[in-house]
Image (cartoon, rainbow, N blue to C red):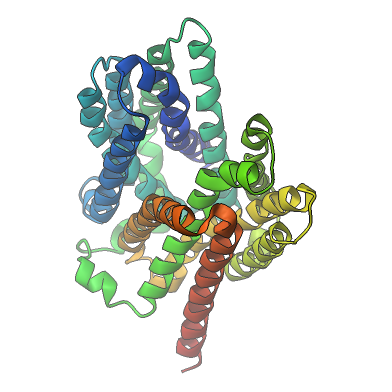
Length: 390
């Protein structure tokens, strides 16, 4: 199992690598392709749409082919898509290769998360998501390395695609290990057929967790998208400093997932989620203090990100216990779909609000999203507690 766990850690790195690559490449890519800056939204929307679709289909795919094959093939698919990006000479080619990139990302995300929830402890779920952050952190540096050398953004995509191909080879070689793990835990015997969406939506408490996921991911995505603009416009910070300090939320979240691994098994998923929300609230309250100095706001962003760290992995890890191991793959797939819906729709929706009422509402929007997610998870906990006492 140790060798398989190492392979899965590599899989989470592979999952994170493409996520921040396009944003790092777009400023130079947009100039070279001579298209409007806003057209980046078309690419990201297609990627998100493919991810949502693949997440919804993940239960059928894993039921037919198994989590190992779905993961390996999905990484190959993303590698091919990134290879296609590296040879794009027209904008429509980016739109074309965005389709397999989104499909591959959604399938591997749902398959890997559910496999870990079924076979490994909560601490590994936290550390694995920390490794996702490692992959997402590495790719901008790879892109920056090549852009600094005669603006070769295509080499950045090519490099990451080669890494993905190498990781997919490791995944294919590890297929027997996955099968051995499933046989040891008898997870192959749990399901007789893939679940339909109607069956999933009938599970008690399912909509609580789905919308909790949507609003939690809205916190993450809105913070990533608008922190820098908020610091410039409301905190009078120079753009270069704002861009640097905007990473505090992300750094706090990644550090939290690493440290959470040491206490997650002891506290349990429910307590980790609750503790994460409490810390996130405390951080966001610091950001709205009416003081001239930006320091409380910066500290608050780091603390809020730190609080967010355990929420996502803990909700995923709790899924088999809350909804049953036989339902977990289908539930995780739908959770991923709602998560990507939240991260796709909420940042531009807040952008419209900011245009109308000012970006000063940014920390209050994060507080609202956080409060909504917290209330929904507590409602799910209460429903589960009532079911257990009957």
